[in-house]
Image 1 (cartoon, rainbow, N blue to C red):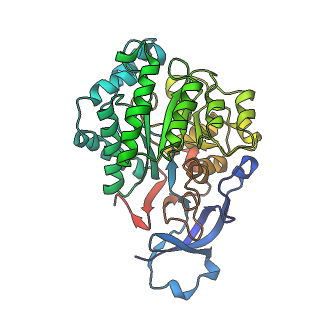
Image 2 (image 1 turned 135 degrees about the horizontal axis):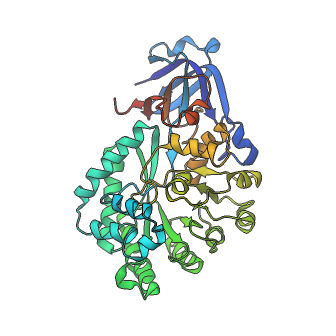
Image 3 (image 1 turned 90 degrees about the vertical axis):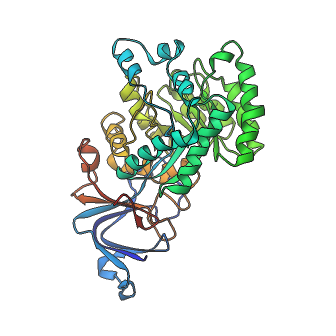
Length: 414
């Protein structure tokens, strides 16, 4: 169905100049049109412009009057663990009582807890919870989501997590990208043999994942107590042999060389960066490796927030994501991520929008057709309730300003 949006108070096109991302100061000036129209056909944006220039040739299209409303590109969540077996709310109470995230993991909680429950679940079981969470984030404006495995830590469980994510890609309107994260933690059986588990990931899991075509990327938890920079580079080199690029966890718990390892291995993004200083920023400067910040993790765990202003000052294309997972960020609200970005990272609302649209798409290397609303891009967008300023979206952090969501020009969750 051809679609025509008219009388849009403000249409954030984000990227009319064809840039692959918005770097540094450019993040504060995403492109927009006021009193605008948007015409979409066959799932893509065909034309945008001012209402005074609206041609008669689009009169056949289904028309939506957007009077007083903003139209934004659909949000892109480039880092999630959306497929998992169950919540870990009991660990939430443990943390209230004083245990740290690391201490919970050391006593068999955390990732190992989730892996234990994953082992007992089928693909169908995993898919049921995944669909509910996908519908939840679509209602909050997310139209593309990256989904990691990592709560399996055995060959069959890792495959099942990715099979559930691929099934979502086939059966849900949300756009899905998948990431193999077998190197998420070291299972109990390999507690004294990290190299043995790394060999299992590289020599058994990775070939099986590639043979089924289950992953678009490979991830490693490169951090204190998990995998080393050397492990990370080794695994990403192995992944490259299968044509799978890297997107890594780095510097959540310490400055352990994860950012430098990601850059050295040509990772598309290095994510977390709660522990990030001048050395890490210098390693990123001038590269295409995207620093992706996950402020809801810092909020939930009470750890430092990533240095967004320093990264922007270094002319880097900062992205933001939710890290939706059962342990350290049990929520998938991009609007709340934007609110934390503004209040805690001191990003402007426009910078936050750039970070969850075009730059998030670039972290997935999909920014040639996602993350903006210019001709040729996917017709993935959201229509807000009537509002006066983009700042209202992060300002009213507990309110829902998203009225309708479209993916490929089709409304979802009606």
